[in-house]
Length: 619
Ligand code: SF4
Image 1 (cartoon, rainbow, N blue to C red):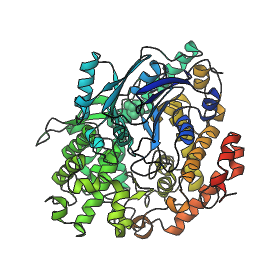
Image 2: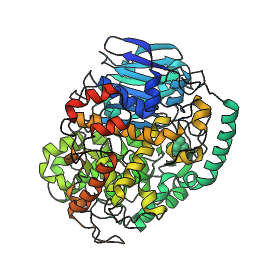
Image 3: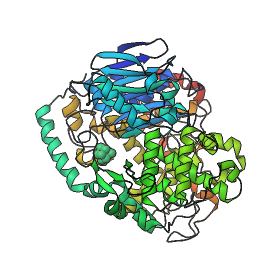
Image 4: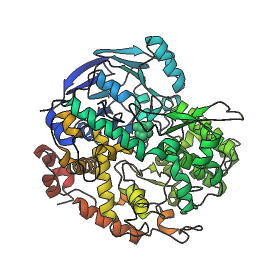
């Protein structure tokens, strides 16, 4: 069916019996679900039962590249992981750039599925078609950078790509990512799943290439896309996503001190401009990226002097303003510690901000924190708490359980536990951008501005939408989610997608020149199919309308100060958006996809049939 883009093979490694095999992938699945996130979700539906233990041997790590991953195109670096999240207990899709995706493809595989649990620590070495499961006892407990160094030395190859579970994942902190060549599968705990399988690392080296149907024509399009990306994304190159920090604060929409306010008085020293002038060392780039949005920074003084990391908007927001911390050096250090221990920066910052509020309200004391004065603005307390989370000591052990565990311990604090489906909020304020509230509520993996839909562009930059309006947001969020679902399935970075013609009206020849099949006009429908598939999975796992709601702080407390003072997103306002959203999706009022919509979207009969049991509440 395809003349390029896809390799049609997946590598399946079983750690319980120490075996691996190469399996063909049905091209009809790739045609219907594209690749990456879509195909990973399709395998998840088939292979992961709804009630399994996320950290037990029945869970799997399902990695898939897209047809464009590794193709000679700008930013063709992305690949996806689906697994059951230890942080939320539900379906998780996670996205990563760097180098591992194209290396996997160059080694000859579209996907990699890890199943079972090893008896002792191991790592997997994929060297083209040679696959080895090796002892990793000597790597146990090592930080991420030390692990990578040892692997490169041991394998005698400095050009390998690595995916690593950090020491915090080994201690089963629920929100650990998989660190992959300086990027990460950050949210939801994929790293914790990896460590639960006693899998410390995956090293990959591939020497092949991705076949391309029309190489000459593609090369022309690629050159134009590189030029377009360089011209239109210059601010990304200069400041990365940190460019949004100042503007969000100026609008009164910058989550601060656990969403108690949305104006941060320490903004000046955490702005992108301040970062660039005082902390930036250089830009870093994922595979073939002409933008290089990552801003490598270095701690200039103090205990952590010399530590380097590349905090982006979300990490600056969650580890910075959310914790009341205005010392940018402390944010760089906190980000570096999270990266080294393998902890997701966003969950970590948002959970520590919540703990700071517990402390300030007197719900926990210095006795509980092991002497840490866990107050907003205390950068030392932030860093000490991260260290404690990493080793699960005292308060760190409690916070390491994530919001799901914290809700059991502090059930009366749900109103200011900033999460949806147990996934901590990102650094955007729903009372200042109502669309982002719906994104958090309806995202397939819990409160997430990426999978859920980054509405900021439409609610602010294009001037098309009033950010405080609710009517129209349901349709908007659905559209953004569908675009993101197909982008995540193609294998390219969302930052350069428009340079390649991938918008909400997809056009151009990229997909045809790579695969030989022109299915670009169908991409929005494919995106909707993927999103609906994810909802089917969530419905099977028990998710309903009640789980799409937001915490009381957003729906009951008005913003207390700044340009958005008095703004609130009440339950009634949210209901208007949610009803419109469900209607646009063809889901019933409990958020369950209807049989009719499944048929309209061209799902396989077998899926519609299988869904009968959990669609029974719908129509
Ligand atoms: S824009 Fe940033 S995240 Fe996207 S591919 Fe380039 S470096 Fe990676």
